[in-house]
Amino acid sequence: QSFGAFLARGVTLELRGQANDYVGKGLSGGRIIVYPSAESRLCAQDNIIVGNTVMYGAIAGECYFRGVAGERFAVRNSGAIAVVEGTGDHGCEYMTGGVVVVLGQTGRNFAAGMSGGVAYVLDEAGDFDRRANQAMVALEPLNDIEETLSAPLLPDDWRSLAQSALPEDWLRHDAQRLRILVARHYLQTGSEPARRVLEQWRELLPKFVKIMPLDYRRALQDMQQIKVRAARLDEKAGVAVGV
Image 1: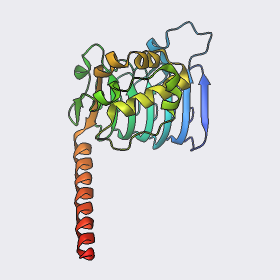
Image 2: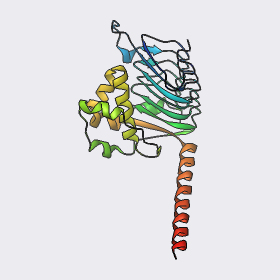
Image 3: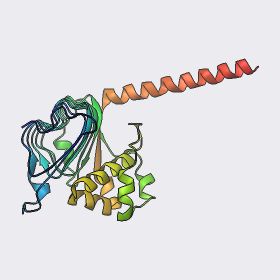
Image 4: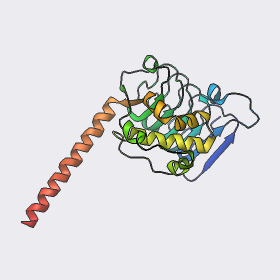
């Protein structure tokens, strides 16, 4: 239990096998990679690879899990990045920051009490809305699909893509951010679902759902408006000084 708890920045833990509950608890900037051993005959995306309450209270860092997580995945995550291939019930519960990508099905009550951060879920069955708790979040399509569809990538490009910095504007660049994270997941774990998403980007991208907390969106929009007003005031002040 508690594999990689409180892991600090600059430290990477790579596990071939399975981990129990509380993986990445309090993650503080480190990187955790978990994938099945080469001898395993199980289909990774259909089987549990990490247990319950993974990334509880994480504040920074990255996690890549080649398989399904148990219940309460990323509960109270406040700033870490995670890619996983499925979750149990109550995923992203009370999440306040960071980003989570789920390349498969989730359990029920996803995003209950989620007040910050962003999640992306691959909803091929089209029924994710029945498993999400929409009391505090909006379910919506990604907002820059055409931008990335016009720039297809070959497998030789995936490594350079994975090294790209994530866009910081959480109100924009969804597809670009998602593709970077999926590429990172593939390179770190050899994930079959990640490879499939990258290869079938045009077909699968529209099936992703963005989960965005309503109050978080309003706060980001307010901050953007404040920056715009401040820039205008600075511009007017500069003109006045020039006169």
